[in-house]
Image 1 (cartoon, chains in turn brown, red):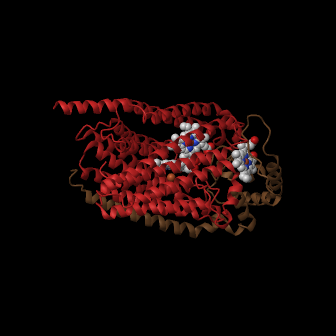
Image 2 (image 1 turned 135 degrees about the vertical axis):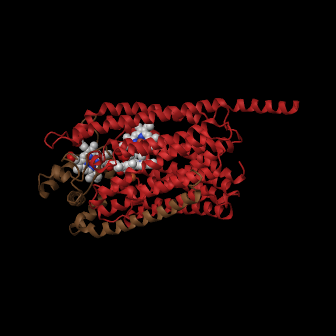
Image 3 (image 1 turned 60 degrees about the horizontal axis):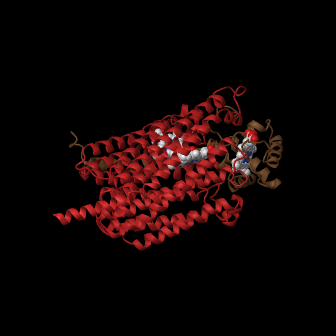
Length: 148
Length: 472
Ligand code: HEM
Ligand code: HEM
Ligand SMILES: [Fe+2]
């Protein structure tokens, strides 16, 4: 029994299967890319959003926070922080962000700390735009509730 | 040791273990910061400690893979390494670049590091696991090129065994998929989509080829089982790994933008990913049961079996528990993810590196039959201390994750606890994790200690042999 299943057959499954599935992945990726513009609403991706992503990366926010569930698990999810803290208006979210970024680190003993990043007003506004844009990506309705 | 050039593996192994110690120290610091927000935070913010922890992990695993390749490829190819000189130079380049990058994280604020390294010219920084400055990433590519070239040329001039071919395929894949780390568009969804082509296609793709090849090599060496049999197993394991794992990447595409068919594709294909890990368990135990001789390096056999079992638990079982979309909806980005990440990385990749070190280091140090019994006893203790404490850490984080989901995600919005309030509630479990982390550290120290015991035994052993020879 075991002899009839030869090494050659195993090798063919490896090469054949591996190549086939990889091509399938490439095909699916093309299809996904075609449909993506609608889901990621890139028409709204302004200069400010792009700069905001840069500020996000330059300060390694992902080292404490998750964004769409990916990153670190030390601090709140931020892909939906606009929904949570914005009170439904972009105006008040920007105000919240300015106040929040300026207030760090909060002086509560023993509580996890977010550092002070010394950002300019423009940088904070860009961050807000980036987080607002992110909150509107079609992500199949994740997270389950507003707490993230 | 068959070939003099295999010796270049030694510094790689030693340096890998040094970085491993660093990784755990930073893990323990973070573990404390989890429960005491003021612990060292003005010196070392959590995000910096995390970068150091995860980047040290990746770098020491790469050093381990390199050491493993430089050791096993010449032996398999039955020829000297193409260029031992290049391997030595590459070691120093990688070591210096690695240390400089870690120091960069620790000594300057991250935003300043990004400026100093001209990140704006080709922005690649600030994404999880890919935090390295762009210049370091370019350095990693060059190091990989030199490494793959050296190994490739060795194979070209020697025997092209299945183990060598699988290993080199894995190494080329590692280098190629790393190139996606240079793609960082301002569209977050595209960024995330292709970020996984580095992270997922590494650990659930090409790294499995590397893992399979190293495991197969050690198994042949310590059991003496017929190569044909081992090679058939190896092909089947990696075949199933690729067939399930490539589309299995869909388990990361549920909630970051891609379309709904990924919910099905990701769930179904990734549900099959445990199969190759289970086959590794069957393979390892079957080969050891059918062994042709009793290798004196007992503890190396233990590491090989342990890698298969712990890899299956971490990747297979802990991967499966959160891989189906309806479950992942609730567990995504929770402590469940952290539980799985720890056991999978430790069980599969940290342990395969310790397996090859356990097998090869004694030989490199002139002990062809393994370390003396006292050293093996200490190493066995270390094996159990690290494995059990890591399982404990995983269980603790799993409890933390389930509790987190129950408090924060399952209830309706009005009743759900906020993130920070939830973390406060589950803090006791984070204390348990920290204590288990300390036990892990003790195990690691015992492991390092085992390299320094038993030389006397060995000396008296060889004296005995000399006397025997004289008497005969
Ligand atoms: C033994 C003591 C250890 C402690 C206390 C520890 C602690 C931690 C902490 C607190 C995090 C950050 C979690 C977060 O983002 O909130 C983390 C991340 C991580 N650690 Fe460890 N760690 C330890 C050992 C290890 C070992 C041995 C490995 C693997 C060999 C490992 C691999 C990882 C990985 C892969 C991540 C990223 C996880 C993810 O993104 O889901 N750690 N660790
Ligand atoms: C040795 C192999 C593996 C390693 C080293 C590994 C490691 C990891 C790590 C570090 C993460 C966290 C990534 C992040 O920070 O966002 C992760 C996520 C994940 N892994 Fe694995 N993994 C392995 C195999 C598997 C397998 C075989 C499965 C499925 C059966 C699986 C299922 C998942 C899922 C579903 C996630 C996403 C978790 C979330 O939604 O937050 N993994 N893995
Ligand atoms: Fe994955």
